Length: 258
Image 1 (cartoon, one colour):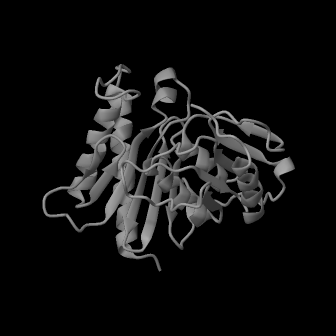
Image 2: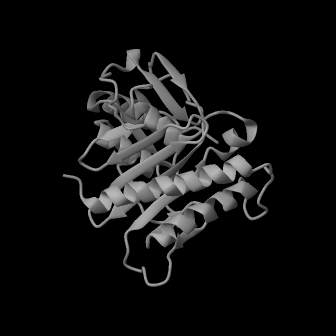
């Protein structure tokens, strides 16, 4: 039986993602925020919408846009790691691959992952130990073990071919990793050393692992790093065999540059 607190968390995280969807539906400003490089004004609006929902539920928050914050009286509450709008540049250019990604972390680690692709309206939910769904239907990764037959998503330009069948660079890690979770692609690899903050991948890694996939870090570091300054290089795959093959190739290759 699923802990009722986790069921409640799913509802809250989906509500926060829906609040971002409302911001995007009303948005016509894709200008810069003026606060940091690469940040859009709408990123801040999306962040505010997420925080309003998560604070009302009593959660602390670690957000890409606003760091670690909490409503009054919730210093010891579970924390939600959130990227309000993963793939902002895709969204700004009309490329249909951008999402809200939210992960509840409790005393036992990452517990619930929610990723909502605002372009396709797909809703991915993973609950630790209880499987994963896309739009309410159970999902699982491919059973690919052979890198030569694999379709591999990447972040950053690969320095060379790893011997895969094909690769794809789609520009948003949260939906990228969910694509592995539901068997659309077979693996995904960060080609950039320290290329991602925890908000970029943690929610979708929960979905992936709940679905039966596997994840690792290029330098064998903990992926659940609740530090706004921490950066990691995740790799995920449908099977341990494929994960091992990609990690081997990634570790013997020079990293990509942004």
